[in-house]
Length: 484
Picture 1 (cartoon, one colour):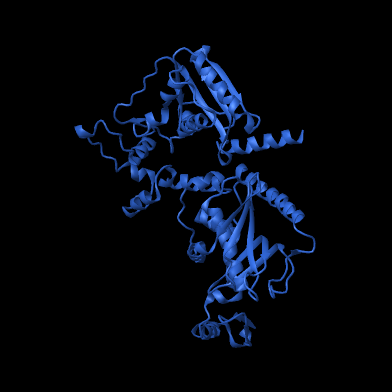
Picture 2 (cartoon, rainbow, N blue to C red):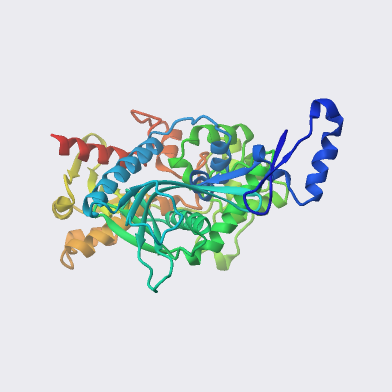
């Protein structure tokens, strides 16, 4: 007995055919009859492709992540990724409890049927697992909540709005696509347009109403690409990207990329540039290193910013040598003050200003710590006070994060008076990354401070820790103080 799903509705046809009697040699003929009758292999119950909200979310982050999750690949471990999952679970539970407490009794339903919505009395539903069969695949969505309100016109269908809970204060375009996926599934299940979705997020329980209908075409496009990906027998090309830092497969993928000497190990290379190199048959760092050809810059171009060359970076890695282009200049006159800042990006909150004043054995370390956001202005004023006490201060930092910090804090809490030592020091601050960029090529995959310092012989107390984990540490510290 063989079960085959019809492409029209949810009817099931049964083929009463004894394969043992007929012999397996007739199986292709039997299946061929059904395929010519417009039944595709994907419509066989045993092979129906299923795209869940979890797989959809993984795909919009990284196709390889989607493939690995669909293949039930064991995670290689990522403390930050596990923490994010835990935070979202706890936030979901807490916010749902808050919503339930604010909803009148008798108007809440758990996993209610979505038929006959006109007669329904619930206003808030939770724990809905909905699925809908499309042409060649099934879409699954674990709806965290659905809000129901009466129709705007007499006799019309009730309006439904899916709800998602996300713990971060800032939302991304991926978050909006995910709630649009929920609305898309709900729309197909109820056969009514779901015009909006709601995302409740952040410390202040903010509710963002997302117009989902304008995102449906993009959702369908991503779903179809995910179906094509998972229908293939081969995994997608491995490409390291920005999401790797917060992915549970980070260690696995980086090991694979290192073994393959893949050019995606070079951070900062755009997808378009990588595709162009692939078109030329260049897939590895070693291959790329042989494409570099030294050229003398025209005289009229010598005063312009040097262009960054990935081929020189590849050459530095192959030869394990530092390569210098042009004549980078770094003039340090006065007392150097090395600045490093830590913060929570989704809250625009800076909680730590680290300073090292002077050099050698006489250097002094200062750590300015903000227990809460209310203390942010206090540590800024302390920072300005330190600049005023140093003779001929020269502020030195690495990267654009500190540049943004100096600008934003001045706008929030006031800049120092014009002509003061602090004002002149901030104006003349030196970003070391801008000095070495396109001029000094270290044999490292990126220009990250930790990688370059490691090449120069410096070590961290925990070499496995990444910068993104400081976000996790700060949240955990704040939570432990709240429990005291």
